[in-house]
Length: 243
Image (cartoon, rainbow, N blue to C red; front, side, top):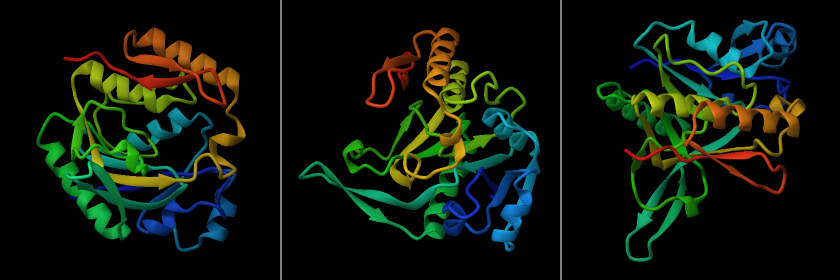
């Protein structure tokens, strides 16, 4: 299965890391930054847009591909990928770094399996071994849009009302429709979201966090729990209804 990898990027032509792991990926940048990106990364293939809303940017990518196909979206700050091995005696996971090409081949193998089932989202887990419980995968659990594979269908799009937390929205949409998501808990990716400048860090505000939380909890009642964190009182946890 030949699945395109698209990396939306903003303000990180000299900081981004994901394209070093996956050199075949297409970089998707705003027209105002194309010259800068193409000069700093002349060997890369680019897509260009004129949008500012991240959900709209992601949707414009999905709109480019035929119904029934898959697209892998990746953030531009992924540093490494790997898998967990599980020790049944100690009940602890060990984190093992993988070559990106090997990791991607394994990931695409799962997408091929998902394509034959009802699943419309596929993605890995976080890189924290404490989050791994020995299970290979889980169904209808939250898949972070840091790295996510999406099956193209006309009614599966990001909600453009939310410029942030739109990953929460697309997870809730898929589960609410009964389409299913497949989170590969033994595969992990590690990103630099909270440290790297640029990207949404340049415009994300507490007011936007609050508005997104209020909107999503109203649109998908019973799917989210508002969680307090050190940085903001407006964070969400994905807790969809069982069954």
